[in-house]
Length: 247
Image 1: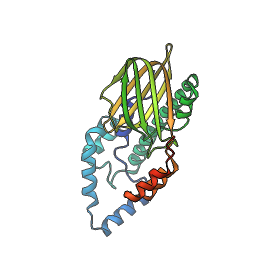
Image 2: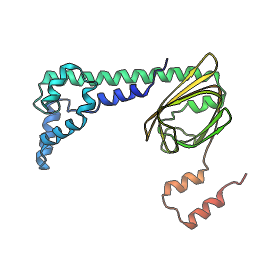
Image 3: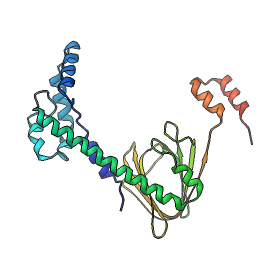
Image 4: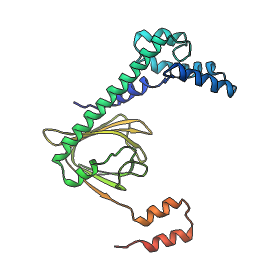
């Protein structure tokens, strides 16, 4: 049984689609700031509520529906007791999602111990915000290359090899440039299962296989230096190439 799913992620997002100030002081500051900027705060808040109303009503407890329908859920006139209950509900939704992420992490850490040390090295750091660089299919194997630029891994490029793939399920075909958001690895009776929730576009991808391996690579220091400078011309590029070790 999976901890992570697209439905779980979407529920969490819907529960947090309408943040509101948490105290009288926060509301007072928001009103003062709006007045100073000549903004109609009430009108803007009504528009924000209208934009998320449909999704919010899909997850909102019945006790708050009245305040959505009359447009006061995110207005300073909302009764304090209702505001506190709404904030508590949103906080509990966040806590529930954090527990799901923790369970997925624990599942992954337990499962990865059955795999080669290179795979363990990869999962020792987060893949969050990595992107798909390339996908190659070869017989019953699938090669997935991911780029960690802008992510949280010290490794620059990771090459997963999913060997003897038995099933692959997705609601949207995975493609170049998609972002890793959440993921979970499971040990099964006959091998392993790996699930990833992607963004841009949103997708839930699950692949089962008998085994998996991984390789990872680091970019040269010269690459990081050139990237940090943020300006590439013919001279700097030639200097960069000259510093590379062809071996």
